[in-house]
Image 1 (cartoon, rainbow, N blue to C red):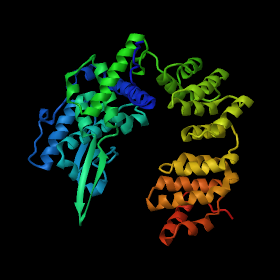
Image 2 (image 1 turned 90 degrees about the vertical axis):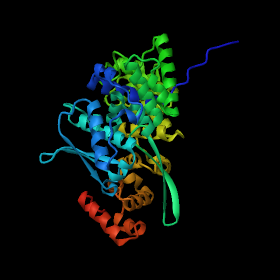
Image 3 (image 1 turned 180 degrees about the vertical axis):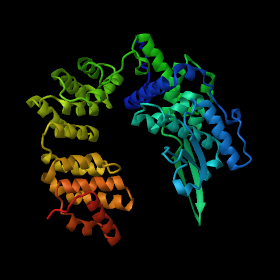
Image 4 (image 1 turned 90 degrees about the horizontal axis):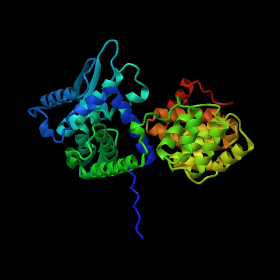
Length: 444
């Protein structure tokens, strides 16, 4: 018996929802006509770059980028500096009362004309959003601003410039490292380019053949998905007349959350998580989605449970059962919901200890959960101290503060623990000084 193969979905639900909504936001800002008229650059040779010197390369690259982006409303200077001064291929500094906005390009970036063009495209896009009236903080982050070059015809170059394999040798040692130019990966750029083509009513654009393979494969998968959804009548968030937001009726958000479309479910979950005092129907939908939803939807649906108007016995049982789940993302979301519903986490202290290791890259959410329980979780202080020591070593100020605030909340004996876990006297003094700066007094 013959059947139809299901179209393979590109990327995760989270990635698709994020890119669709942010591409939609970007296109709304610059205008559909602007996007449709943008010339897609497929090769550096199409740009009038002067390779005579680093200064001429950067200046001509700046001119080419600015000519293709929306008109810049305020001045932005470009400076070339040693890479050691900024630590990145390029940086952007907002304008102040005494100086204009500044883009700094590392000298080392100028060794690669492609990377030079794209770094300038990303930074001038950031500058654009920083002067847009009413722009949100999200608009100004690379998560949004790095989509603007795609809408202005730099997507093919952005795909090619995305990953860099740097090989080096020094003093008898050799090695390699991979770095990224821009916020998005090659496959994410492929999906954004598929949406770019959709906005321009292009079904099989010539420029797609110039994409690197991974980006092109994702774009082609996306176009197949778009065709399937168009035939079935299921719309994309990207071009829907109404999208999930806090402005939409709670009943409709609840319907979407437990509905068959994971993209609408995820976006609805984000909207409901921003509200308080959810209706019984919204809570019921969140419970359903937490059990049967898409892997990306489940943690968001669980988080929504904490916004319930009242904590019924059934809701309490559901949340506490979810706290015992083996998947860390679901467990954390359930614990966050439990905190909002004033349910204690003392019986999950061992799981919280394990989560500190699991989320070692960014344990801040776990530290907040531990701190929310106050002195009841004082016994976890020795598990937090190694994270503090590493944060001090890595000069990660935000993590140092997160650790210290957590230790203060659980009333840890920092005077005894600091010498035990932090060996260097200079580092100890830095931690004690930070405690004072944060106005956190050691317990007596």
